[in-house]
Image (cartoon, rainbow over all chains, first blue to last red; front, side, top):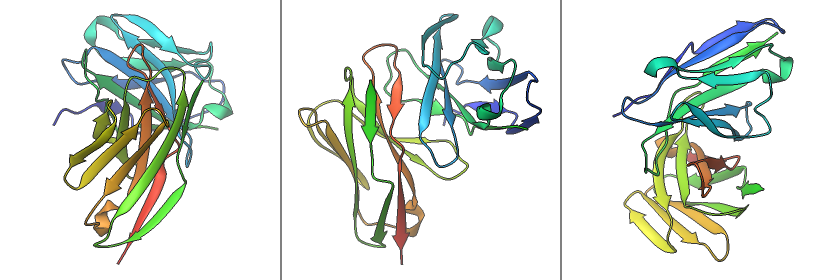
Length: 113
Length: 110
């Protein structure tokens, strides 16, 4: 079936550094999402993105976070600078225009030391 | 705000059934989805409901009562491999955003 790919699967960085998480969404999908999941806790909505713009973001989407999808390439989440509390698994998802189903990637585990 | 509540754990026996409950209190409602998530893996879509009643999808069935803010996922003929976390997610009216509960970890014992 359709797949969302996330690169890398695990990223370890020092606090204060910049990190970019990459997502290759399903090819004909138009809506893109980032969710954050701390181990054992719920999936928390960060942001969604459509037509080159952020449509909605949560309180977790701090000023240090940004998203973009330049020229139909990867949908990226950039954190600059990182903080210890950013350590989590970040899931990317995509969906079609009027579809109730989100397709998720396997997540990128971010460890901030 | 978006409040989606699920019990943390549920145990059942192979060959029987399990009912995973979800209650929600959200500002707006545009459908409810269930996802299965195994540890270290992506959530996988199971079901979507927007109208009241029971939706039978074979191994998985989903019930919704909008007036009570309640849904359940029913798994029948349980197998050991059904052991996983089951996530309830409510869709907001705008922008296709899903708000997840914390998930129920189902353990199926022999």
